[in-house]
Image 1 (cartoon, rainbow, N blue to C red):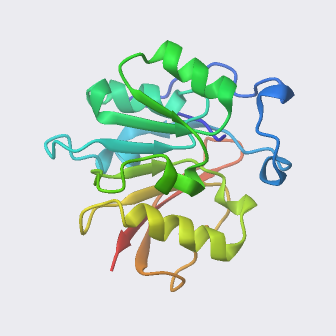
Image 2 (cartoon, rainbow, N blue to C red; image 1 turned 60 degrees about the vertical axis):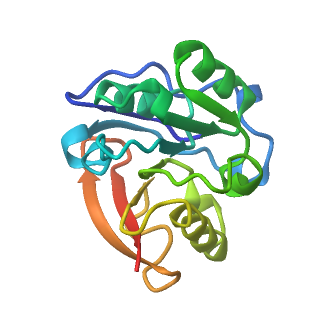
Length: 196
């Protein structure tokens, strides 16, 4: 899964690429997920987390934990973070490195079977490589995440394409550009999705 190093300052993250055998054996992993190394917390996901809401934050595509680490460094208590990761080796590493968070091993596209259907999260930070999915699957994924949020709360989606991965006008949401990270190779785009 895609990983990022979010922090108040630009940080060095540990190596992104895991041995091939740790990557999920699916068609969508045939195209290696991109990596993001340099994203400042002031311009991306942390500006959308409402620490006073009392709700948990959902992170999808947690990978090696670079996003996780930075979310916690920004002040979210570990017990308020739920990280979903499909690759068993990455999920095990997350559990070891972040014992206070809830790590859910499974496919973020099938959250209905993984999480309490009645829980509403403060926001979602998604690093799932949506460009590996069909446009209809991308729209369904974003719509399903927004169904788990209170009205007006955002999904932040990270991608390396020039356009929003779930297109404007495709679902029951509005999309806005949040940030463009040039320092990353390849450059990263951050998009917010909110229910209309």
